[in-house]
Amino acid sequence: MRIIGLTGGIGSGKTAFSALLRARGAAVINADRLARDVVAPGSPGLAEIVSTFGEEVLDASGGLDRKRMAARVFSDRDARVKLEKIVHPLVRAAMADEVQRLSEAGTPLVLYDVPLLYEAGRERDVDAVVVVWAPHEAQLARLAARDGLSAAEAEARMAAQLPLDEKARRADFVVVNDGTLEDLAAKADALLSDLSRNLPKGSPKRY
Ligand code: ATP
Image 1 (cartoon, rainbow, N blue to C red):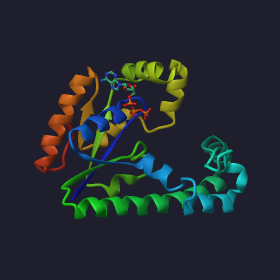
Image 2 (cartoon, rainbow, N blue to C red):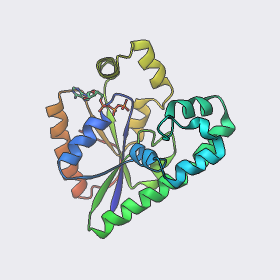
Image 3 (cartoon, rainbow, N blue to C red):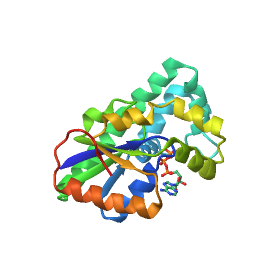
């Protein structure tokens, strides 16, 4: 089974594109969902976080208070490393479980949706990478419409990631999300068709 990484920049359309891939029957594993699942209420992951950071990182219902946890690790590098040491191995194990389950079911291809794939050095874990790219102006407009972000707020968040153009340069496949959602759907069809034919890696192919 081949594992294809799927990534992009904020507001570039990764979520929209992975929904289109799923709707076409593709197996998509979402890294953010795995990271939430491994610290869900009652999980060993959450128990380890509480024993490391104390109950003050829990919300009223006993779940992880993500805002509080984020604030705690934002300015404290040691705390961040501790949190990553708990969460990352659990995510890797959950990913391995899902890959094994899909592989046993005869799935030929799985897409692994990792928003910060390059930032986290995860391109080494996948056979090829798809980057969903969008023009800067489109990213700003979509972030304003979806999250009510001002241009300055959107720019600040983008500055915290590897530039999207750089991700597109490193990718094996680049999906240019500069049109309508129907255009994006046609690109999902084209990409899946190419991936099913086992195209060799090389300079990025654009859709
Ligand atoms: P983030 O990493 O910030 O969550 P993302 O890359 O997952 O972003 P999406 O959530 O897929 O981005 O897209 C951002 C917003 O733009 C969403 O509201 C989505 O529906 C919309 N959108 C994405 N692509 C298009 C398009 N081609 N036409 C119109 N709207 C789009």
